[in-house]
Image (tube, rainbow, N blue to C red; front, side, top):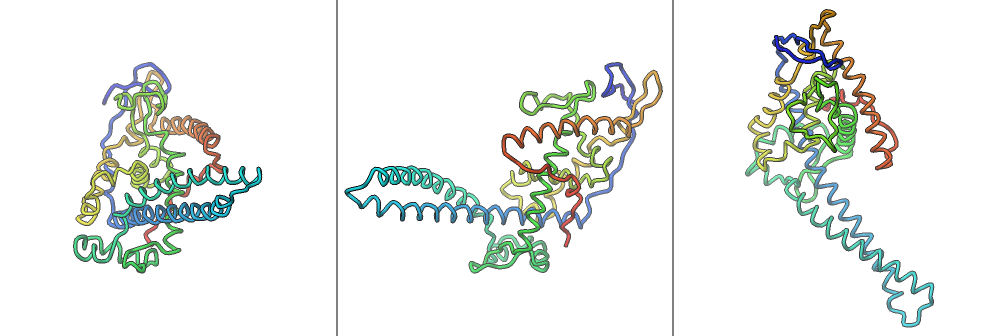
Length: 310
């Protein structure tokens, strides 16, 4: 047993610490998560390419509009005003083109070619083969792997899951069990050891796969891609070691139980109280983001349960 403090009172209590063993990350999950990571990287390139082409088209259109007006010596006041507006838009468009061109250059390593896979990254073949067989990717005219229409749909679902994770689970990443409060990422020192990560416990209480929640958390933070050799790690099977260790090490619901002067309070009761408070805070934070970003609909938490092991 370990002395702690209840989330709802400042009186000392005794938490009942039990050994909790969670099942390991399955091979199917590793296959699914690996494919989603590859699809995410492919889409990073394709999205960057689409943005660059869109800005290039806008720039060309503005240049076409500018040319006849600029070639006129005698312009009306209306034409002078129109030319001024076009030239201002052109300045912004050309600056945007510089940015999208750089973003496309940065994303170029995600444009996986058949030659690269055959020569240097053959360990990715099982993932890519499975994706191709399911119609998620195909080989484009440059002999590189690219998303199909089906792949675009899968990626949209993944983005929905990421949005749902941020909205419904991220709030439980930093919980002060002694004070019964939640960290404010904008003002609190998140490195403080008073915070407990309860995302896995919340997921298990809600019947959501904790591995999926942690996967989405790591993908949202781009943890998987911090190592430039992440594809090699994926190929040799070590990329998800940290994910698995994180899930195994996190607090379990039963570990939140405690005893006080009135008797034993179960971990289920504690986590239910935490979720009730967290849900209210999550809604408030979403509404604040909605006002700032003009988002329309709060994402559905249930989309997190979707699997893509086609």
